Length: 98
Image (cartoon, rainbow, N blue to C red; front, side, top):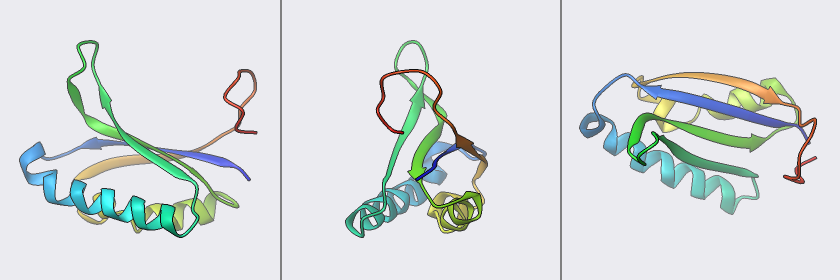
């Protein structure tokens, strides 16, 4: 099944995004409990400080399916993030996700 990558950047201060981030975490855990393959995390700088954005990796049948799922993400629904979605096609490496 194809892999997709959603990247996002906060458009509002963390304190305003925190409730949506907590809802996002619950949403991810709910999907995982339903068998959806996905993983979510935040991006940090060279000193380990959060940089105001995140990354979500997920498997879906095609781009439309992945996009429909992302449209349900509480972070996206909040309007507080700018995001992109791309399919990832592994070419070289040892991640074993093919």
